[in-house]
Image (spheres, rainbow, N blue to C red):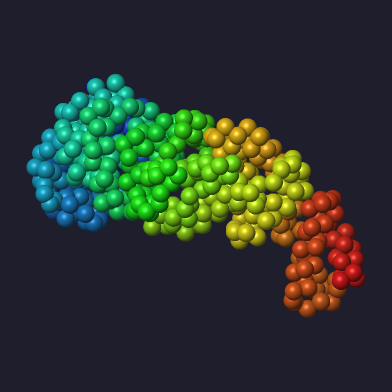
Length: 441
């Protein structure tokens, strides 16, 4: 198979030519070769050569020797850096192209290309596995996963990314060795989870992660002492409808989908009540997995607000289509979490939860709340203090007031009136409303 030259950046050929002039071989390897075979233009390029790092640094004018210990030099062409790796340097050095490819993760990532003739070098069946749409480890799945347990998550994530299946022996080894996953750095685990949740058909592959116990292993330490009803200990038990919901909502951002996963995972029926077991522990796990503070705060708030609405205290009936009550709920979200959370996402979480449990009334009620909130947003209804056409300075100027609680009270009153009647959201009308409020109080 010959690769399409048009899909390879000209700078790659410049690097190859320079190495050839100095008497060295060079190959395009790994994900770049895979991407071109798949019909895509690579985002990243890795070049493998028999030149030692010191020779690479001598040949090129601009280099960054950041990875010489591992046999890699960053060659800068124009302003773009490119990884050039020596198979004769590093700890330990592979010493040949074949040895380098033999220690890569999956066969579709273990192909190379001679940059002269652009012919694919496939020593481990990557082209066959591409044709059969499967993810298969190179040589030994056990050896690959023991070397880097994160490859277990990556196998599922790459299967999700490309719509492939995982080869039977690879899947079996992943399940047998899933207990090793937590040896990987937390931020690497987080990165794989985020990428998986961003993949199409992620419901199908979430099911795969559950089937090999990967989720259980990642979060086990947080839940090892939690006993669910009936003595059940495995907290990730999703039903078939949950996976369908994930597939149908695959375009949603990963923070929403992670909140959805938490809600689905921790629900257990407790008589006629809805109960979520120890959800704060799972939210805490996100923090320890090095999710950013913004992500952590947002996902925590989404889960908390959905839990609030689904509990007896916040559930209620008959308000979902009432735009004033929905706007009041939006205000309560801000007051409860001190964050700017999209109420449409909160209500959608609740609606999808209703669907997952077969509660059609709950599903329909919160679906109506989503539509009502959408109407408020698209029609630009004033909901929050910052939406008002008046601010604290306007009130001080109009009524001769000093900074203090009274201004805050006046703004809240103005907001309550604008929530009821959006047409009054102009300075003069709001000043009149505030004047009446101050006179009465």
